[in-house]
Image (tube, rainbow, N blue to C red; front, side, top):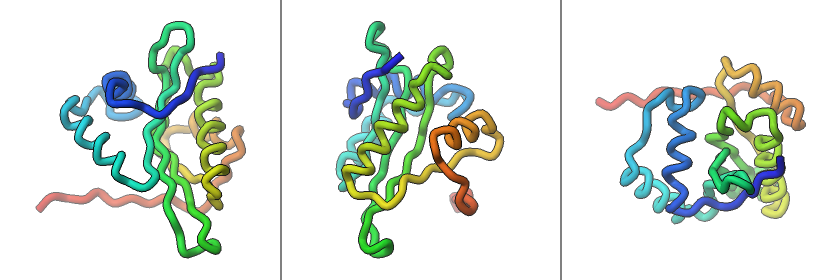
Length: 152
């Protein structure tokens, strides 16, 4: 199945939040709509930070989503870098080409933006996702580190 992929609009947020509440992402926790709307509006102020959705062309339902941040650099001769985040496909549509279509969409945007690379990180426990990314041509490169930021 070939989904329609486009930049999300504020009317799409409920469908995106439903996907983010899945066990793979936020484990049933859901951001409130008004909070999501504030963040979505803030994202629009970044030079190049976008939320994309994949839509089932027959059912007109949101079946996948990802974000893409293109960041300017002084390294790599000034070529920007791209970071893919928050990739998820609805369970009923997994292994149907939706994730592949979203990553091809992202890669084309990165190519058009003149990026030197497109990177993403994935939790260690997501073996199926890792195999998927490697099949698409992503290569393991170094380590991804993170630190929880505690409130004091």
